[in-house]
Image 1 (cartoon, each protein chain N blue to C red):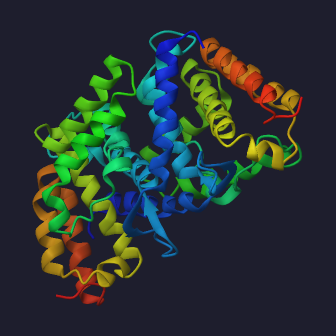
Image 2: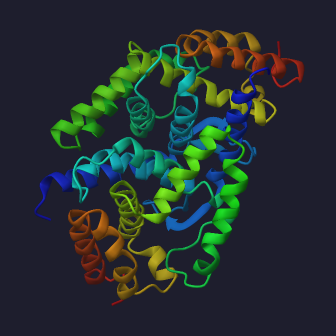
Length: 198
Length: 198
């Protein structure tokens, strides 16, 4: 192939196929198996089309939100999924993910490498309204999956309602108060139904 | 929940979790299992960010392309995946998928139902540059997966190179001549390497 730019882009498209084999702790809503990062990123992206009207700030840029959501977990090809209720692995999470970004994004042509790295950093830093909204969805979605499986993954990891409130409240609230109100109701329902120990 | 609109949106988000269990004929690049529709849609969406510069027409709307790609297979929750080299199931494909769209998109609030149905119809009809580019990616991606697995899914279905050329040439060419040039080279390589019978 003569087109060196296209060759790099295709190489990256080959590489990220591996994200379909990075499994998360959350189960699919039918409870049969764990969800992987590619499916999760797809689900979040569709959610962002539907729910961006609830963003805390008006006129947020949907295209940038979707782009962030599509690529936010690509670093986990090398760094693996860090369960959001684990304390220890969180300590070196950033370092592991930075190293992964260095390897994976550099497969791309320089301008697109820069674009993807900036999107990933924007998502991680949560300094823009778009990143805060994307992060809120990233926290809300596993709550939905847990609720639909009667809290299977919460219960198997011994997660308490206090931990769920703690871990999600600020992040979701900072992206969307409407979505936090909904999430809080879902968590309270989960406690009532015995999906989540108090 | 008092917010009836949000209730409908969340109901739809629950419903589409099923797309993660609709399996395609193509295998992941590591050859271990079939790809599902949710992963496939994610992969295409990332591809569209990287490759839209090769669209046949300039200044195509990336956001609309990504939206189409994210939702184009949702009807397969009811209609199932139709293998693109099968002749018979193609006959009633449109009818089955329309029925599915009727059931699934009506879960949404009316304005978003209309938005999603229009995006799906635009993708299916391929009358806009955006839809033609999205369709080109939808054809290119399984070629990449087949190539990486030494043609495993082609060979297990007895697909010939003539059929692959036939089925993909026009659709990819109408979206991007650059991407068709690349695909043609990939197909010829596959014949040479014995992944695809002549």
